[in-house]
Image (cartoon, rainbow, N blue to C red; front, top):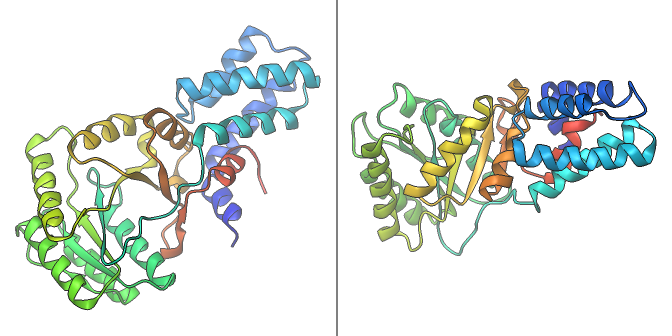
Length: 303
């Protein structure tokens, strides 16, 4: 399955809602009225695209509509181009350094960190690198078992301990193991925590401090995993996490189950944090590197 096909399939709910609404609005009259503009804004905002991006897209659409005589296709193409411009360049790649590269997955409960850690490990293994997984979520019921099951399924070593163990200690042991094996990547699955719980954020800072003392510059990637269904609420999450543990990028999960696909555009545009990967399904290969061009196209056009 090609990348655009995966994007289209995962964004079907958003695309169907957005393109249908835009076509309906721009084809019903030879001139866009103020009511039409408000409806366009509402259609874009309903996908959680954010005010800044919405205003930019609407203004570009207005100009194109007036010069093209109301061709819906050209309007959608302009909307696509504006969204792509807001997303910036391709960012769907992990850092890679000589020796061990440490990637920490952070976020709130239920965002999909454990699954994302496993899928990222699978991706680098498929590319010829050797990964290790660290089960540092010692609080959530079944989190350790879940990561161990992924490890067995994907034939990737997992370093874990018992529930209630110190996450920083597990990360330390996992780094020792990865270094001893000559592994290329260590993916750390951290416990879910609300960004408003300062004691838990301090614990995350400790884990990063410990791993940084053991591996120079670690973590080399700190990826915030966000559930797409929460829409624009992800902005506050990203801002607060970034204050405690500087983020290097975002992973947006569960995009296949929401009509709020515009939130990816809003977050990247407003926070200037690159979206590195997006989750478009349950299978290991359904975590895809983010491509602004393909994503923007899949927001407005079907196959």
